[in-house]
Length: 105
Ligand code: FES
Image (cartoon, rainbow, N blue to C red; front, side, top):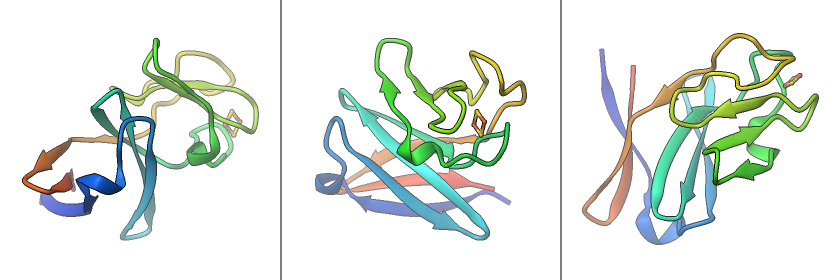
């Protein structure tokens, strides 16, 4: 069942910002790229690298796993480069009044 959770107040996640939230047994990374919000599972599908520490490529809308360099599309969670070949989860995220919320299921 889909559940809506609060990520943080909007002021805490300005453009260029990132925030990690815990939901059940998962960590989810939420990033703000030039005012657009994306939420992606914070665990690389290759070998569990911590994507939250990765470099963001705003032009490709992607994040690079700091462990072995796989690049993931922040919109779809699909890997754009090896060594990862499986996608990671992404979640709908939006601004709801003064808060950023995310749908999880
Ligand atoms: S753990 Fe992410 S590329 Fe290997």
